[in-house]
Image (tube, rainbow, N blue to C red; front, side, top):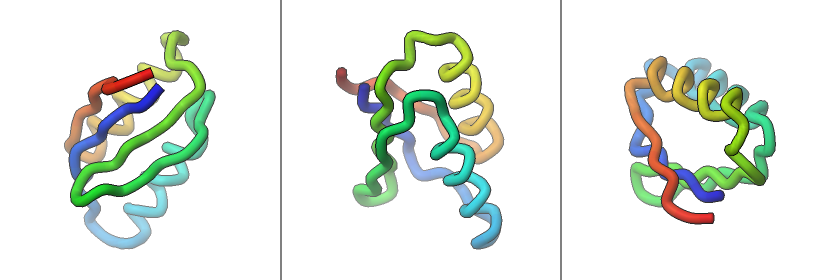
Length: 71
């Protein structure tokens, strides 16, 4: 599943490191790629409510959203 995350807002490099640590820890994480200001996250399966809730929490902290754009 591919998820688009439009430009998260980082306050400093440590803030950015924490963001990516949390992304890497998501259940089913495969990879994340940056294209322009957007991130494209690939995870094996987001059918679990836990993964969706965790991703929503991450996006809320870094003032962004996410959209599932493909399987």
